[in-house]
Length: 450
Image 1 (cartoon, rainbow, N blue to C red):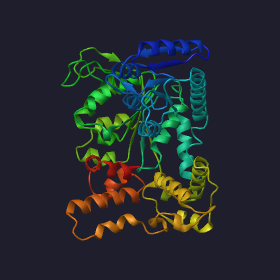
Image 2 (cartoon, rainbow, N blue to C red):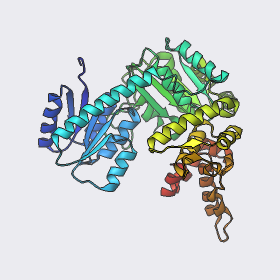
Image 3 (cartoon, helix red, strand yellow):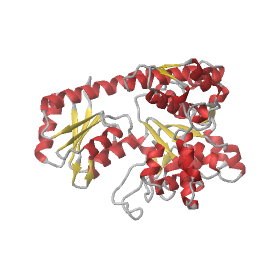
Image 4 (spheres, one colour):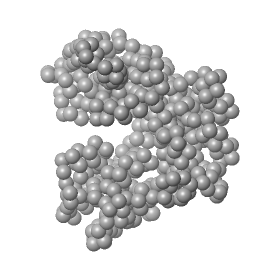
């Protein structure tokens, strides 16, 4: 594509609508690919990266929300415009929650759609440029530990060396990975992120390496995996310490040979990627326990970046708190400042959930404050603020053990600001066990995570 020409995916099952909108997009100077259903749309987003996706909500084999979920898994930065003739408040809320740029109802005002497309493409391009330029600035802090991290990132960005990022949950491992990608020579290539811990054990190899049609029950078509989608770019494997041993064997071969086969396939596919891994676990300990291959550990541990816990850099806490105050005051259009007592309390707290917990605490304080000055009673109880009500449900008479367990898990999730790894660690259970319990709690678990 030349100049400002962009590639747009249009998803709609009505022939006349596709023809009309295809002509409109081409008149704007962009290329367009059209899909009549969910299956075709998901295949296309898995095969290439689009600058924008326009999708109808109601599709013959699913919904535009389904397409959006898959898109956000493989290309989370791509903006989505949802178009529907079946508008409901619930659908609009869900689309917005998932990150849709705009939600339009049919019949679509074509002049408005032209403006929406142009603005979405411009803002997406601007965000990517700003993201690259300010990648290191996004890692907020001036402490010696953070300066050391930034210097190491700058040293390795000119190479394709494999990087292992270690640190507790909430310390900013993904942010460091973003900076490495943004400052590297692969910044214009795909950047595919995978949380290994949330992948089904039965389907982890299919998700990573793809599969051929008929490879297993339910494999109704060929599907590219995350490695193939990341070709010519960067693959970020988060929580790699949770990867099953049998998958580790295949990953090791991919890193050694720079090629792989899809599940159920025989074709050898060459691969050109940069690999960044992250974990909150002690991989040396996992190796000693027989849960992580030693040869794979050496292969991914070429350059190691350790993200310090927030309690190790207390001088950065006021700076981070101010950064988040400005962010959420602007988001909610509120005029807020910290009282000196709040800053002192934030600095004195140990932050087991690290930067993520601090961000959640500040966001909550900005919203809860009834005046311009954020006072101590706006902070969570554990940081020196008001007593949290969630713990009071643990002592009610007549509860079953399951009720108490559910209440306590949700209480811990609330206390640690949604940090599931921290909750699993504090409860002494596995992360996958925690995910299963939260899934069983249904809407109550989803609300607690949010």
